[in-house]
Length: 338
Image (cartoon, rainbow, N blue to C red; front, side, top):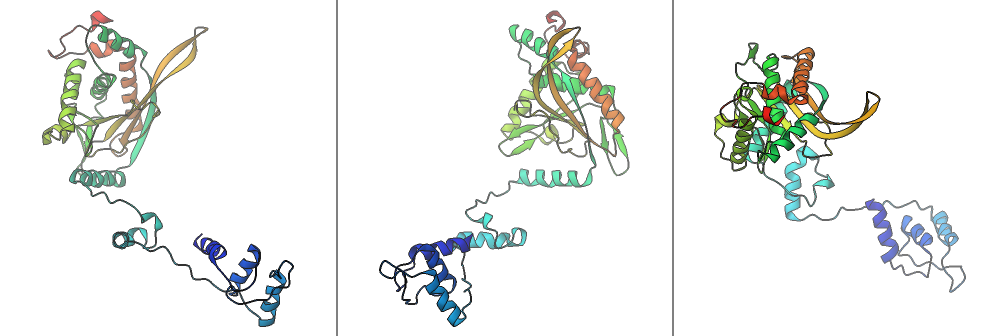
């Protein structure tokens, strides 16, 4: 590309001492290094230089095409210094590095990068996905909203996942060098985006909390996370992680990297509406795509499917969620709203 630009520059700016000639003849003169030689043309209109005039000289002097040396644009001192620093990784002549911006790594971003890299390299990730029907949950949320109680879909998801973990304890485990550790409590880490990176505050004992209690804890933990005020025990540990991108409607399904020493992470995609035949009639249903990403060393595919089955049934029927023992924080009667 540079060579082509250089030739075009010659065609537009070269001022040979010979007579007038067309672009094709100029290109031929440059090709054989004759652009500055005075040549008598034999063509009409003030004896324009013709291609045959040039070729006659080329054949008589047995000339060969000239190799033109093309130089890259000069770099600024800052660009050159930055490119030299990265030459071992990207190559010293990588033009994509020009006019770039260096963004220093924060401590938390550096730690996240190391942990994610180690997880992907050392843990055999496996995946099981399912579409969950959530019409009943949306209907219940509307009733709660009218009663003045705001509970998000994510709060129900956390509760459903907590109950599924209690029903399938082989998912609520950690992998260690000595073996698999089955955990006694259900502590769910919830991925929260902050200005410094993704962090996962923990909703402890989520299986024995009511949905409203979960909602209050998630709200408080999220505020602390965004203000960088979380204590270590509020984000280190946990037995299971949930990452929800459902608020981005274009994300139907996705996978995530496991957060060790945990052995699984549940990803939540966006919801969609489908029309399906039922009892001879068309019926609309709202579905949500979920994927369980799990450590193949500690969790079998059968256990993963059992977990997803319990999770799906809990969200499909809200009575399964409210039938569980609830904490005093849940100060309203769900059953009255069904």
